[in-house]
Structures are given as C-alpha cells and as structure tokens.
Image (cartoon, rainbow, N blue to C red; front, side, top):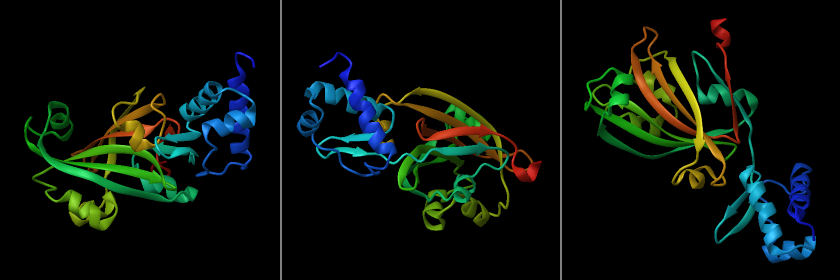
Length: 240
C-alpha cells in the first residue's frame, strides 16, 4: 500500500464514470466492498470517494450510500435578455423547478436600492430551486415590489415561468439591467439542496431585471453549483 494509493483508486472510479461503466444514478458498492475490490484500506477508499464527491462526480448521501451524480455542465449566456429556458432549451436540457416558499418582508437596504423603493417597503421574496435534467443547478430568491406584484408566487406556481407571470401583469418585455458574480464556499443547507459536496464552492449571482425604460422590476440572488455552470457574458443575438 502506498501513501497516495487513494489517487489510483480515484482515477479508476472516475474512468468507469467517464466510460459509462458507472452510469448517473448508479449506487457504488459499500466501503468494505470497495476496500476488498481495490485491495486497499477503508480509509484509502474513503479518501478517494471524498475527492470525487468534491469534484461533483459522486453524491454521498447519509443512510443511503454513494451514487454517481449526473453533471449537466451548462454554458449559460448572460445578456440583455437572460432567461433560464432560453439558455437551456436549445441545448436539449430539460428545465424544471420548484418553489421552496415565499415571504412578505420589509425591504432591506440593498433590496430597496435595487428596486428603487424606500427602505422597509413591503416586498415579496420568492424562494426557488432550478433543475437541469433533474439535477439541482441553483437555488435562489427573487424580490418584487409587493404593491405591484402582490401575488407573484401564486401566479408563478400556476403559470410555470417568470416571463408568463410578467405578461399576466401587462409586461411584454424585460431586460437584464445589471449582474454581479462572485465565488464563495457553500454555506448552511446549500450543499444538501444542490446535491454537492460541502467543500465544493458556489457562484453567487446578484441581478436586477428592468423594463426597457430602465425601471427595475426584480432583484434576485441566486446560488449556482460551481461544478455545473460556465457563465458567458455576451449580447443576445437579437441585440447584435
């Protein structure tokens, strides 16, 4: 047994995943079974599995086992008309999502400034998780002026898309006013919600959507799995 034997085991498991021997969703043998299979100690196997989980190839689920994780790598274009479905549908990636809850709260300073409201004005905070081919890719919160969009979460649940909801309020077009992106370690419940290893980082995207005249209609904070998205900043084709 060598000091870095775990690297060889890691490479063998990764190769089986890349070759399709281990398909997405497949359950790996138990730790003792893998130790016997590779002729290694359980600590060595555990290290190899942990490193693959950090890279987003495996999901270690307490009480259930270790599974091969599907990894849709998304090329996500951020332009004047940034839309999740518009980014993923042409690539054949199935988009779905779920509402995790919503709250009526008083706007904190940064939310109020983004929406051009008085600090403490009522806003609706809608919490959602988005999936690509059934795998979580982001979780986030979108804030709206409660006076203008009082039942946004309910309409979003029924209509299935933010664009459709805006149309129901008489808004036929909206633009991305500004976007900021930064990386940080995952916090709290984020790894569980994104099905990723706690040591894998996330990308935090803050954005403001506006009407064509520049008036803000939404402020969002979305946490993306850093292993599943590559952002590309470019103008939309219809703006060239």
